[in-house]
Length: 296
Image (tube, rainbow, N blue to C red; front, side, top):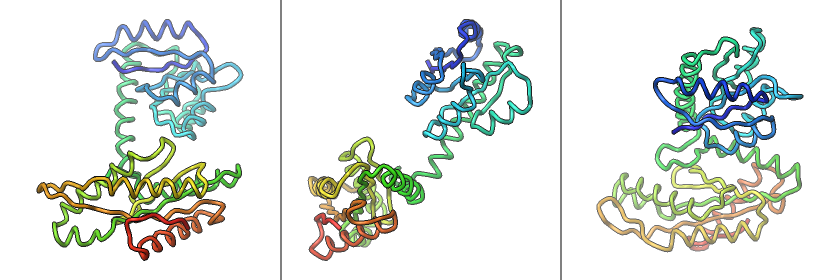
């Protein structure tokens, strides 16, 4: 049963919404509740809810501010805005803030609420699919280069603002062209997917892994100084060395990877310099014989 979060400081609205849920025809939902801005934001950001019903007035703060803060912090849960006001300005402001629908409390009937929830859930699924297409590599499922560049700029700014280290590891599959030339492109695709899975398994929750281009991968490591960057790079190289990749035809292939690591501010002052420093270290690892990691 899918869970819906109601954020409203009026408990009468909770009882009314629960009663309306009981009259739904197509699907039953489990209703969770938050009475304050802070609790509502916490539950919304925690995930696990299929949609959110959000009241305009939340004590001294309003629902528009909550929507903006949740969206700014990466929340993509569909939000339906509830208000006692019928002003078109509120309607427009809610949609501009990120709500997917808008209901006037005095006009809500069970059928109206059920239809609004179905609309928001379907539109939310469509937006999620579009977001994935825009930010993910189709072959590996990893972040694509555009999204990685966005995150790199964001994390670089955060690291500089708070005086914290930020590391980058660039990895390149060794002699990958020979895989395609010898075994065909489906084999090359299988190697790329296997590499993505192995690299991802070594990372922390806060780390970000992307397909940087072709047979090259990139790992963004927040709060990581040079020693930690080199340690992670060596772990990633070892993960590829640990076992062969099994190709679709059953052939076992000993695929290796080279890595270059760099950290801000030790090796760079901005995002572009950080990429260049990691790339120089990667080139040095290749030049030194491949299947190894080096620090910029």
